[in-house]
Amino acid sequence: MHLLIYWLIGFIIANVIFGAATWKLFKNAGKQAWQAYIPFLNIWKGLEIIHRPKWWIILFYLPIVGPIFWLVFFVDLGDSYGKIETKDKIIMVLTLGLYIFAVNYSDNPKYLGPENRKPTFVSSLIFALVLATIVHNWFVQPMIVPTGSMENTIKIGDALFVEKISHGARVPMTPIGIPFSEFIYRDGFIDKARLPYMRVPGWRDLKSNDIVVFNYPTDSVYSAIDRKDAYVKRLVGLPGETIQIRNGILYVNDKKFIPKKDAQVQHSYMVVTKAPFSDKLLYDNFGIISTDYNAGKKEDGTFIYQFAALTDAHVTAMKSNANVVSVEPILQPVGEKTEHIVKGKIDSTNTIFPVNKAWNPDQYGPLYIPKKGDIVDINKETLPQYINIIRKYEHNALRVDSAAGKYDIYIDDKKTNKYEIQQNYYFMMGDNRNQSLDARFFGYVGEDHVIGRPIMIWANMNGMFEAAAPKKFIWNRFFTSINNDNPDKTSYGIYVLIALIGWIGYDVVKARKEKKKNKY
Image (tube, rainbow, N blue to C red):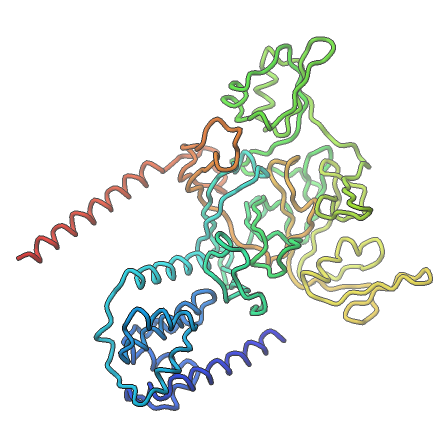
C-alpha cells in the first residue's frame, strides 16, 4: 500500500511539473493552459499538438517504455516550436526533457506545427526499440541457457523464446530502467522506483511437468524480483502437494513422478568397462564431453567411469555394449546431509533446503508445498522451512526471542505460532538431477517469481559456453518446439531461412520498382 501511495504522490508531482513546463506552449497551440496540468488529458491534448496518434497515450504509462515516450514527446514538442536542429534534440534528451522549460518561457514561443518534422534513422531506431521492448516485457522474452541443469531436455547454449501471456504477463516491478538492461547492464534501473506485484490475467494455470522460467528466489545481489537471475527448471510440485525423493526417484503425493515424453531426465552413474571409451564415441553416441566425467583404471585392469549425467536411454545403450561390465547409479545414502560451511557459517546456497534437515538430492523429503490460504505451524522445527516466505517473499517483520530457553516467534510484532500463506508456491527441479541447483537448495518459488514458459529453441550457441564441445553449434536444434510432450523434435530452421530470404528479396524488388517509378 505504501508503494501505491508513493507512486500516486510522484504522479501528481510529475503532472504539476509537466504543466509548469508546457502551459504556454499549450496556450499558443490553441489549447487551454490549464489542460497542461490535468493527468491523461495533458497527454491527449499534447498528442493533438504534435500530430501523433491518440493511441500513443497507452505507451506513455507502460513500464520501461514510458520514459522513452516522454522523451519522444518532448522532442516532437520542441520540433513544433522550431527546435528542429540536432543540437536541440540532443539537449532535450540529455536534460531528460527539462529543456522544454526554456522553450516554454522564451519571450513568445510561436507554434509552427509538426510540418518540419522529418523521419530519421534515429527516430526509426527508437520506435524499433520501443516495439522490441513491448514484446520483450509483455509477450515473448528471449533467453540463453548457460548451464546444464536441464540437460539433455534443454542443452547448454540453447536460445529460448519464453512466452509470458498464457499464465498472465507480470507487470515489470522496476518500471524505470534501460530496455534489455539484463543483457547489457544489469544495474541499469532505478531501484527505488518499484511497483507492487501485479499480473495481467492469463487463461492457463501452471501445470505439473511444465518447464518454467522464473527469477532465482534467493538471489543475494538484487532484491527487486524482476531483476534477479532467470532460471529454467521443470515444475514438479504444485501448491498443496507433497514431494519426496527416494533413491533418486521423485514421488509426488507418494506416486512416482512421470516426466513428459520429451523430457530427458539424467542421473549420475558409475560405469565399468573392459577397455577405455574414446572421446569421439562418447560425444557422437551420448553427447558427452570430457568435462562430463571422471575416468580411472582399476587394479584388475578394467576402467571405471564416473558420469555426472546419463539418461535412461544412455544407460540402456551402455548396458547393451559388449565393452561394458556394469552400470550402477551413484546415490547418496539416507541420512547423509548435503551441507556447505563457509567460515563457520552455513552457505544456504549450496546447502539442502530446509537447512535443519538431514537430506540430500537423492534422499529428500517428504516436503509439503504451501498454497495460498494455508495456515501453517511456525515453531523451531518448521521455521527454517518458512522463514524466507515470511520475511523475504511476503515482507513481514520476523523476530525470534530465544532468551532463557524460550523460543517465541513474533511476526509483525505479534507473538504467534501460526502463519497464513499469502500466495501460491511451486517446487522446481532440473532434469539433470545431480547437476542442478534447484528447489532442493533454494526452496520454494513464489508465483510472483514466475516469468513464463519456454515454447521454442530458436538457436543453439553451444560453443559460447562449452569450450570442450567439438561442435560450436547444434544446427538441428534451431527453431524446434519445446515443453510440448513430443519427443520427436523437428527443426523448422530451413523454413524460417527460406521465409527470411523471400521477405528480403521481396523488399529489395519493391524498393527498386519504387525507385524506378520515381524517376519518371
